Amino acid sequence: MKAKNVISFILIMVLIAAFATVCATDIKIGNFEIPSVLGDKGIKKGLDLVGGSIIVFEPDVDENTKVTPEDMDAAEAVIRARLDSQGNTEATITRQGDRGLRVEIPNIDDPQAAVDMIGQVAMLEFLDADGEVIMDGSRQYVSGATKMYGQVNDGQSSEHYVQLSFTKEGQEAFAAATAKAVAESDASRRIISIALDGEIQMSPTVREAIDSDTCVITGNYDADEAVAVANLINSGALPFALKDAELRSVGPTLGSQALATSLKAALIGIILVMLFMLVFYRLPGLVADISLVAYISVVLLIMAGFFIGDGVDSGYRVTLTLPGIAGVILSIGMAVDANVVIFERIKDELRHGKSVGAAVDSGFKRAITAVIDSNVTTVIACVVLYFFGTGTIKGFAITLGIGIIVSMLTAIFLTKLLLKLIVGFGIKNTMLYGVNKRRDA
Image 1 (cartoon, helix red, strand yellow):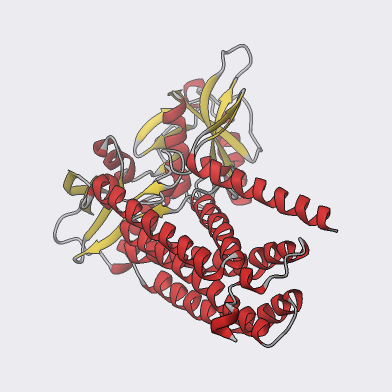
Image 2 (cartoon, rainbow, N blue to C red):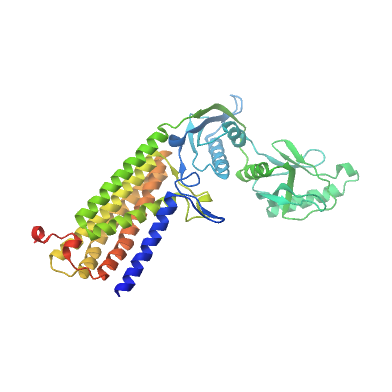
């Protein structure tokens, strides 16, 4: 039985060490590579840590044109979709007056390129030989666009292109338009042009009616241009053209020095807490320290998107700001607090004469309600902050919420498992579990 407990304990230690290693450094074995979650491909950093660009957009219309709040809502939604499609999920959008949209994009190299991408109207149109609109690229007709690479026509070399997927109504409209084009007596009029923002992308000759749920757009695109066109179509059309009323690059508001200082302070605090737990609670304190390492590693991996999608290359990474760092540190404190509640219960049981095994079981059972209640109330506060807050307040809510949930799980499951394994080693001296017989008698 002891051998089984030892083996289980060692395996858990190896797993925790692996998680901690992934957090601290890059791992590369042959062609297999796991980048560190603290590196460039790991947790994203917000504008206050790495700097970036601030762009203020306004409708490019004359002063007499009415711009409704609904129009601004639609423009904000399209800009958000375009930012997300480019991987700028950490960008924030806030209203500035009645006609302004302030966009803050961390760590962007070319702000003017971002302006060009975000501000395009992206009106996709299918035109006949007379330039009349057959159908547009709205969701009524086009369900989506995908960047592709390959041969568009037989005998031609492979190229980057955009494939459109039609809705049923779009397929019917396209089939009717191509049938009408084929019926033209003049061969030069047997064309269907595809235009994006008023610029003709291609004007292929229609040789037969096409009843298909897809079509392609070519335009001598490179890979990035094809992705950009697909993203623009997928994000939808802006209700009006945008102009950049303000465009500036900014440095980090508190900077990398503040980040390094914050991380150093957090590390010192964690070490002091771990020493306190070890001295005051002894073996349970050692278990708490091990659980704390596991907890911090799992939180960082989650924030880096390690368990979601394509790992650290996925788009589900949390953006870390200074308020977010505060949220992580606060959740670490709450993780330790949960262990303190549990260990004090265990000490009470030991003082009443219970065996070590029975004291551990009873201590966890009696403390679990208090641990869950305190954590659930904090999670509720995080949910409220997330849905009603903006910008860095949301970042604080996300990091604190992730930390609280993980800390609750590690306290309830991992700490209990490790402590029961240690009890299984046959260690029964109550002093090693934090009970000082002379003082506590």
